[in-house]
Length: 269
Length: 342
Image (cartoon, rainbow over all chains, first blue to last red; front, side, top):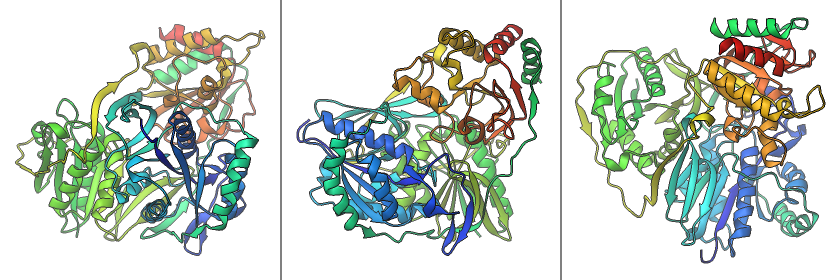
């Protein structure tokens, strides 16, 4: 592979999954209660795509990774304290809301516009990475929309594996129904890959990588472009928590045999 | 007044997937509730005649299709071109489609191409005072929203298990072909095929009546101070075989494989349910050795009857989420369950 890939990863923040979430009415639509106070993490599937991107760039000389994030600048800065220590990337910041109730159409337009303006980005070598869905809106549509706006017609969703051949083509495993994979071959970049979990663990923090990234992260945060995305054309008629507290019968003093018999009767019932 | 397009693709054998019949039921019901509206069917596949005939009596005013060898496979470039052409040709204002992996990949791009809007993972659909309202979940099944839009075309991708499948009679259908030419420079992807797990590792069964969720407790030290991973694997696989159940896993258990700990050899991230996994729909669920929110709340959102086995009577996630919590050693219970089922 000559010249390497230019890998752009779209990824932002979501509330830490251990937090209790509650919807509230905001000035422009639904929001989360105390949204700005909630601890945030990198969106999990976007995180996997970032680690896969960094691994690919490490193994293909000449490659480079950009992380394009749309979110509140202050919260992205907090996130960078940990993420920037894991893998090498150049950050591009769009300062705007990261909540799940924003319209994917507007988010995609903002991301595509930002990617289009990245200096030095070679679109013929572009691999556009991101999660197969966010943990907030969970729609699984934004990457395809960004790809369309950038004119990329080779797209893959739910990717767990990307193997690059010597000639720059690659073989992809995509999740499909029933725990199976579709195997495809693409002749090369440009392409969009919406990642599932991939195959890599979360990299450990490396202070040296953190120091290197911080040289570009802080200026990128200072240069953040406002991205006033909103609910777009969505009219929310109501957002509520499911009221699903069940009356749990706790069985403590039953023998394993009796429990087994009860479970089998339930399964067959 | 809406022009509703039901969009589907065929399978390898020329039939429609079951989830497509569920989406068809949604499209038929929605059209009926919107006075003056009409229904059109749009099909994609190598040859759609069998599929069109199977749903010939659904009440559609017309059948459109994009057919040919290039449209036999699931590929973004060809699927996007085909679905965009069908939506455009039909003049549809509303599009209803099933949440197959094929359409989940391609329909967002086709919608973008047409300047429309799209809602995926639709879990409810109603018409109130002539307004179409959809229900979908946010923050990984933690809160549910009811919403609508005025933009058209509006594409609704319906999740499986929401609607009962359309069950009308087969009837002759006249299919109008919509020509779509694919530029080789635009479609640079070749579909090689499908990679399935080996028969004994095929643990994900979307149509199963029971979801069996295994937690990290299976691979921890047991009461005798020893690991019993091999025994755990045998018990779980035996149960899946006997009960014809589908296997789900907590994140902590599947993560162990990438962290170098003892693992269940058949377990992968594909099994994972919860925040970064799937939220499958099954009538019943049995969780074992799970101690977190992921399997009990998020991963179980669409499980109707839920039972759990773990050693902690105070498990805050099982209590209030499961119907029954058995405080017991899952090794002992599942061994006996397998004997009774076997």
